[in-house]
Length: 438
Image (cartoon, rainbow, N blue to C red; front, side):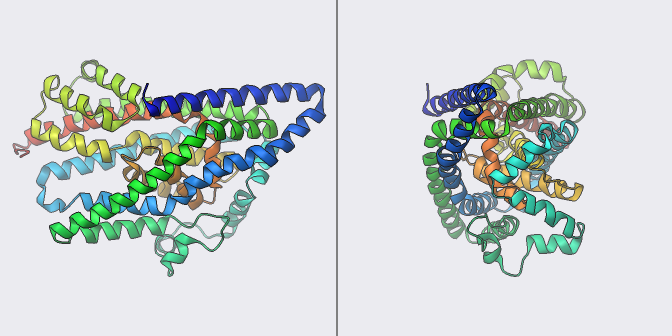
């Protein structure tokens, strides 16, 4: 068993132990309230700080990781105008794939409203537990004007860039939106450099990402202890409502992922590639199983290339271009998951995201999914940044950490499945246009 798999298994066991211990504590509390009160006090004094050590190690890397990952991704593209129709079709499909996925996820979360399964008293407890920043965000929403062009400019381009993303309050993460725009601009400017300078810039950015990934690795080593501590603390304070909420969230996420892979991608295959979806998914079934078991798009890449060549008969140049790029950029499952988590945690904390904010969230989830590509565990600090952007306590990711493993397996399957479908569509369109992919 590989180290990541062992770690994931330990986290799952920790989650189970934490849930069982919390339910037992709640049961004892029905007959002996003093015991429940004592354990709630211990949770506040011991378990919560342990969870905060884990979470804040992740928060440490949000700013440098977002900047380095996204800027490197843009620099890596080079000059798109020299890549011709193959690149144009590929990147257009990548963006459409991820945007549709996030849209499906947000619709699912709006329909199910998993965060609203918590009763008002439980929501108040959560808001009090995490410093009241969610309550302040709710109050600010009533004071702020509606979404407008001027508002968007202010959100993405504040007068003091570094002050915005560094932040003046040590208890809060800075604003991530200006940082994302700045990273894109740095990456775009980097593509205009000479080849040797561009390579040096990318090497530097990749080095920063690698170091930040190392810190994430340190944090993950604490996860088997922090996750049960956090879930125990939340359940003994909020009650069993949080378990129902998590169950609805997991089912909603899994359903949205399945709808995208077998719904959206089936339409693409039928309408854009002229293939039978049922026959196609039978052909790529071993690949989907590989993706599910490894939870890694990169580890599944050799299998993707083999299926594209031997079973699907795609042009080698098309598969060789689209699939490696897709393994690091075309992350529809990840984008869908990020959007779902932000909306779910916002609901749990009573923060109502308006339609305009959800449109911004859809766009940012796509960008974040691209930025997090190839970085093990990197989605957690980026999701924390998105939560902070919308005034939701970033500590809220602690609610979903325990169920992340199964959802990681599912979203990787969607990532890999979407990659191979995108390669198939690009191959069909290039051939239909009578253009050689190179």
